[in-house]
Amino acid sequence: MLRRLLARAFWAVAPWQLVTEPAPRRPSVIIGAPHTSNWDFVIMLAISWRLRMPMRWLGKHTLFTSWRGPLMRALGGIPVDRSAPSRVVEEVVARLHAGERFGLVVTPDGTRGAHAHWKSGFYRIAQATGMPVVLGYVDRTTMTTGLGPSIELSGDIGADMDRIRAYYADKAGYRPAKRVEPRLREEGGGTASAG
Image (cartoon, rainbow, N blue to C red):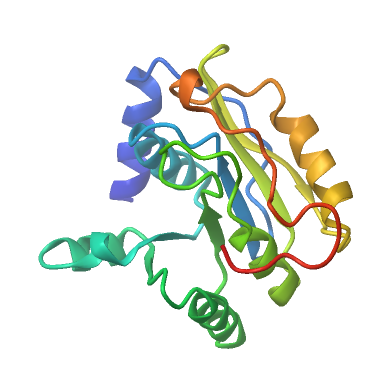
């Protein structure tokens, strides 16, 4: 109830407009992109709470140290130790097998730093679990945000990423200058690997 009230207050005063598809009805990997600002986290929570969508999100394990740990977990966080990324897939699969239902938010363009590629973790998790990929977005040019279409991955990385690129082509992020083109290092053949 409190989350719904907070979400209602956020959308009443925020300069952003929520333009969204309905919340997914089954467990899904939700891309949060372009990820260019810490404000993306607040917007993600507001979307989730407004749509009454059970949500989990991946964050670097250092966010879960000391007093922040219980708060981050209460907000749906799953810590990621980048030295052992395969454990994340195992944990997500275990949660699904235990009957937990949620949208898993992943920011594949990483930590908002200077880099040229998206990380492939969202692709590997979706393939390993059979979860569809929902294209969440933030677009400063239109001041809109929300969930876009849901896609089933084909296993053809290039073709799947072409569909994802087409969707995000006109999405600028909160800070457009920091936007990263949706492209995986693994494109061009084979299967997505850690990264």
